[in-house]
Amino acid sequence: MEIQGGPLTVNGTIDLDTTGPNNVDQIFRVLSSGDIDITGNVTLGQGGTSLSSPTSNSMYMHAGGELRLNSGNGSVTAADGSFLSLQTGNSNTANPFQFAAIYAGPSGGVRVSTQAGIEQTLASGSGGGITGGRIVLNADAANSAIVGPAGPRSPCSR
Image 1 (cartoon, rainbow, N blue to C red):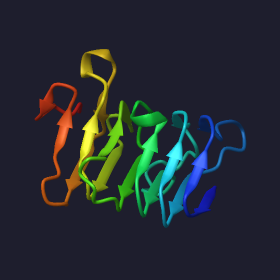
Image 2 (tube, one colour):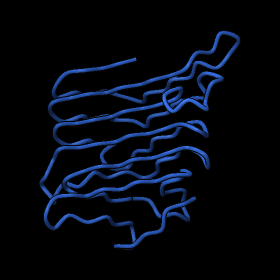
Image 3 (tube, one colour):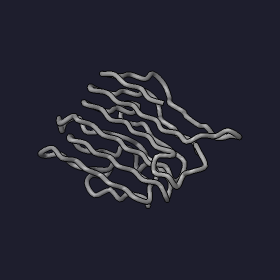
Image 4 (cartoon, rainbow, N blue to C red):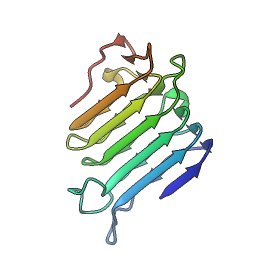
């Protein structure tokens, strides 16, 4: 499934799951030249049986501007072995990419690449954080930061 445009707003939750007798690999792309605003959480189910392929259960959310998940309190959850790529082009460090939780499972991968910084809004003890076998975080703009609810250096779950 692919959604393109600029700016994009999705009112509500996105829930994709193709499990069942005719399950197929899932690739979900949301691409915008401007902001992406999703007012709910995003869930990507088990998908196809070929999860050894890096594109069999993948999600790409790439915003030319800001990426907002449930006003910074949203989560992205996918089946173990999934690959999640979240990217923003916004360079205003006053508006970093905010999220509560990102989960790709212990054998999955997560890549978050932003200009303005990355902020986890929910404490790990309350279910927040990033879970994946391979996690890559980039915050490239001057004065950008990667912070958790208690400040910089919040641990990632593995």
